[in-house]
Length: 408
Image (cartoon, rainbow, N blue to C red; front, side, top):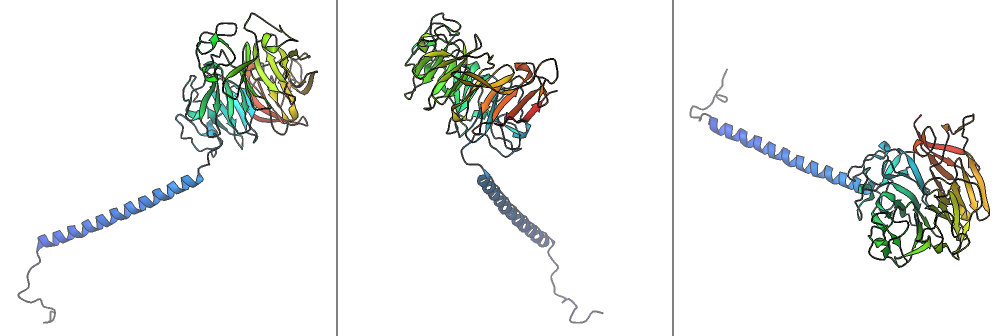
């Protein structure tokens, strides 16, 4: 029943349909604008939080390759460290902090074994070539990396054999050329040991203008000077950035010619490995005759007695307390001016036992010594008769541990 209070007045105006629609649209537009504004604010907040987290979690400038395992690198073509593994491990080097570097000339990369056993890329994109100087080493092209050495400040020096250079990776991960890259001008001339585009490097040549042939090994003297093995020469980088010949004669000397006389007048015997002992003696692996030579601090060349058969580029390594170790055919030996002493022997041959840590015919391809005296060695089927690629650590007490393995 409709009462007088509820009955609409007779003069009431009917609702305007267009006005109702306009009001509904206005309210819907307000809701949409409010929703959009809230979305923008939330998105901005999330972006700010994400940027803060990433900034706070980023490692400080320092070691070039110690990312969180599994985290992809921002370098072009890089892959997550957990997905990287050596193909044919060769030359090795150990940093002062114990980091282990692996030169893989099949991958055209230098890798580092990370905590936990994964590998990260230190230098190279996997493509053989020359590119990238002045930029991130992980975005640079290298070609057949060989012998390596790590300076006390963490700088990694390596022989970029295919490019005729010695290059360096700074602690911040930037790659540069430190020796090589020049033509015949600038102090070079023809002579033994040169390849097309290369030549004989004479004293006073600026390091960056030197025409190297095929550098294979590098070493740091006790005073911190960089030495380079380049086939028929061994060169030292002076504080002023020029090169000085330490071993090698531009004449047709072969084999062990010149032993007992000035090293600069003797044959370098195809120098392919370098290491200093605590007394400042420079040990040189002569690839031509598979011999070990020694340049004394006064510049005299001596032969190191022994029967070892040195292997590999960079097949010599300096250890703690001024020791020098070398890779033999089936062993690692400690060198002294008076001779050699076996450190570890790898069983090999047709009869059992012929395995070391499960690797048959473990033939060393690379060697490095850690600060605590641990000897690191690797092997691969390309460099000998091993049935797998592997990296192992041998403690000073002789106990061996397999760090990585691939293959049968």
